[in-house]
Structure formats: structure tokens, C-alpha cells
Amino acid sequence: MREILSDLSDAMSDPDPVRRAQIQMKRPLPKRFYKEVSIGQTSDGYSILLDGRAVRTPAKQLLAVDTATLADRLKEEWEAQGEEIDPAKMPVTRLVNTALDGVADNRQAVFDEIVRFAGTDMICYRADSPERLVEQQREGWDPVLDWAATTLGARFILAEGVMHQEQPQPAITAFAAALAKFDSPLALACIHTVTTLTGSAILALAFAHGRLDAEAVWKLAHIDEDWQIEHWGTDEEAFRRRELRWHELEVAAGVFSAVTSG
Image 1 (spheres, helix red, strand yellow):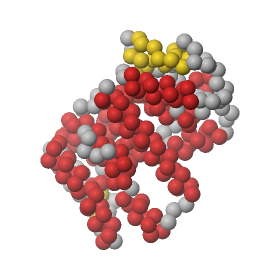
Image 2 (cartoon, rainbow, N blue to C red):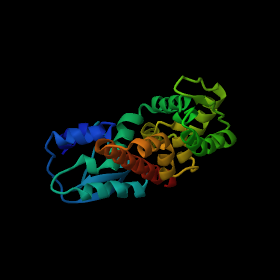
Image 3 (tube, helix red, strand yellow):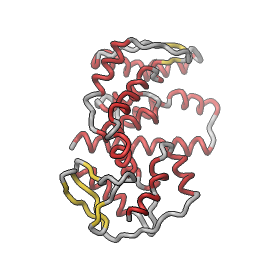
């Protein structure tokens, strides 16, 4: 079983959902080798068992989570596999693998990367034209920045165009303090996922603090893109990529809620 799960690791770990799909299309899917999926309890939490044997991550760690709710979601993914095991249909497993194998021993590095995103955050960079796009950015993003300033004490500076604007250190420090509340590997993995999918650590933190839900984050992250689509249209590949990324964000949001709600 370990060999089969290791064979799946490439397709389950690539950060780009489209790239994962392409990897998967080039290789045959492994056959399902188990009949029963169950949940076991250990000192590490709730583990997933296939015919009584514990599932392990690509790095050979026990696939275990802290909450029964999240364990149920993992169990559902493994149960839903048909004659073949399809990593594309196991996004929760993939995210948990990322947290256990990639974040747990590198928590500070992941934390620091999210904070760096805030230093060049998308919603701080504004268009100077056309007027309607400027207005949409202002209406969508200003309330989030106002929340960060008044609630977190993080007062970010706006800039026009793409020229780098150094953010005040007190704003970065306040942002980091607000992020530090979420110190579990899986919570950080979820926030990092939302950050990279949207290009905005501030939107991701607003989601984590309950200021925005997943749909609002997605809508605000795509103000510029939606304006372009409205005026110039889109193509099938871009639409497919966007749909896959939205699904990734939905999964991260759901896992985050399961982790933080207990």
C-alpha cells in the first residue's frame, strides 16, 4: 500500500491544480486496493484506515487530523474512489498531506511567506483608470483595508500601478500578530492556500478572522479579472483554470472551518 500511495505523491502535491490534472492524464491511475475505510483514534488524533491499515502521507507520516469532522471528510474521499484511485478527487487528503509533510516542520517559513505577501498585497495596488475599474477596486477593497486598520491596527498604504510601495513596518507587525493566532500546520496551510490562490494575504486573513466568507474573498480577488472578462471575454482554458482554483479555495475554506471549529 505504501508503494501505491508514494506513486500518487507527485499528482497530489503540485501546487497548480491544472498542472496536477496534466500530470494525472499522463499516467495510469492505480487500482483501488482496499474494500473498507474506517477512522481510528490514536495519540495523533483521528487516522484513516484502509482495511484496518493506517494511511500514511507521501513522507510516510500517519495521515491523522485533530477533529472528527475533518476525519469524516477524509474518509468520504477514500470511500468515494471507484475502481481506480484518482488524486484529483481527493483535495482534502492532498491539503492534509501538505500540512503534515510541508508545513509542520517549516511552520515559521510558511508564516513568514504569508507575511511577505502582505508586504506587496494585491489590494494595495490600484489602477488609475478606467474610472469604473478604479471605483470597483475602491468599493471592494477599501472596506477590507479599513477593517485591517481599525480591528488589527494594520494600516497599509495604497499605490497606483505596479511600482513597489514599501509598507510601514507597524502595519506588517500588526498583520503578523493577527496571523499568529492560527499556528496549527493545517490552519496555516489553509491560509497559505487562500493567499496564493487570490494573491492577497489580507483577504486570506480577513477570511480567517471571519470578516469575509470564501465567496466574498473570491469575488474581491477577481475584481480586475472580472472587469477584463466583461470587456474582452475569456477562453476555455482560462475558465477551466479559474474553476479549478475556485474549487481549491472552497476546499481550503472548508478544511479551515473544520480545524478551527473543532
